[in-house]
Image 1 (cartoon, helix red, strand yellow):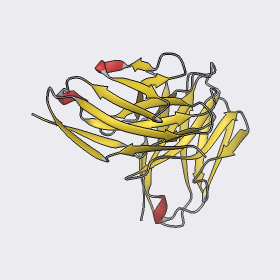
Image 2 (tube, each protein chain N blue to C red):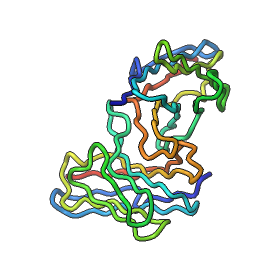
Image 3 (cartoon, rainbow over the protein chains, first blue to last red):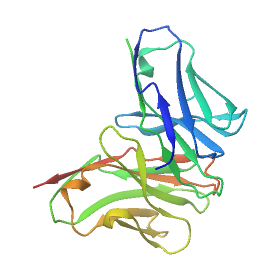
Length: 113
Length: 114
């Protein structure tokens, strides 16, 4: 199994508070992604990274920011959480050989009250 | 623009019956196509992938999929369903070999009746 760790796995927070989710990989893979999963929507890309300090927006990036200061860590920040950001968040990584396949973490369930 | 459409949000089959999960895609350039499976409370894992080699692709757990360019389809099949196949299945498309972006379908939940 690919070494991907997401933390926290579960979090309940209140509207307006900042939240940071962490993804840590031990595979030295270049590409890292943050997706959110909601019923009926599949997985939607929030942000992705193609190297240290190199990031780009996905289709649902509003209200989210990311940072990647080290190859192994990719942080997703909700500056001011809203109830619409209640979701399950998945981190994924992709290998350097350009295989086009993703390896996923186990997810972080976020509830915003 | 690229897109992926999975037909049927929920499919139910009897144990031992044929499994058929449908996926159609739209892409202006030759795509790479994938099927992923998600078991409850877990992340997604790759079942199989098409990357422009053989059009019939075999994956894990007895699943296979056939790329049909004329029909823009990439349906997933398994000859005989097993109870352990109950999960959610996602079709996905990539247009860059380096996986800078992958687009997912909305998913199909597969239930298996005893």
